[in-house]
Length: 192
Image 1 (cartoon, rainbow, N blue to C red):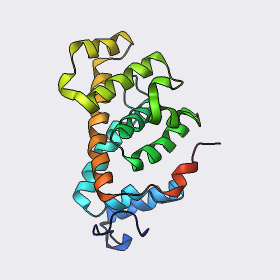
Image 2 (image 1 turned 60 degrees about the horizontal axis):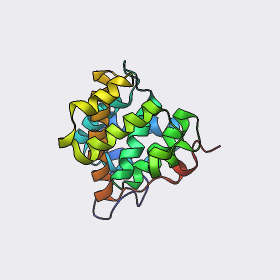
Image 3 (image 1 turned 180 degrees about the vertical axis):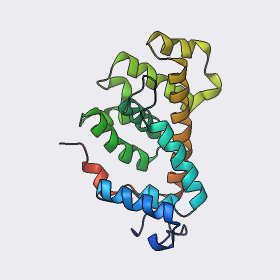
Image 4 (image 1 turned 45 degrees about the horizontal axis):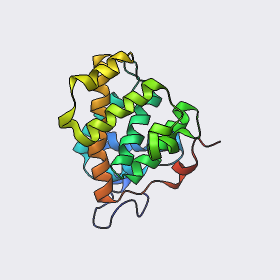
C-alpha cells in the first residue's frame, strides 16, 4: 500500500494481510476512483473499527429519504471539517463536493467562509446549524431547529445534519492525530 499515508508510528497494513472483506472493498474503491484514498488505508489497521466506521459512513452519506442531497451532505462535511482544521477531510470531501454539486468553486467557498459562498438560503441555514452543532452543540435550541423547519427541512433532516456533523468530528480527530495526508488526486478532482 501507499507509504507515508499517516504519522510515523501508526502501522499501515499490507493489502494481503487484511481480512478478505476489507481487502475486496479497498480493491473496489481503488478500481472505481483510480487510486486508494489514504483514509481507507489508515482505518484498515483496525478491521473491526474499519467495518463499523464505513457502515455508518455509507448510511449517513447515502441518498436517504430526506431533503438532503449528496452534495448537501458533502457541504456539511467540508464546512465542519474546516472548523476542525482537518486538512484531509476538507481536501478529500471538497473533491467529492465539487463533483456532486457540479461546481468547481463551491468546496473552496464553503471551506473558507460558507456565509459568502454561492449557495441557497436553505443551504446557508443548514450550514449555520451544522456549525452550531460542531462548535456549541449544548446550546442548540428549539429556535435553531425551527429555522431549519421554516426552510423546508424535516426533523429527520435535522437529525441527519447533526449525525453527519458529529460523525465527521470523530473522523476529523482521527485524521488529525494520525496526520493522514490527502491523496494528490483529490486536489484536481472536479475542478474542470
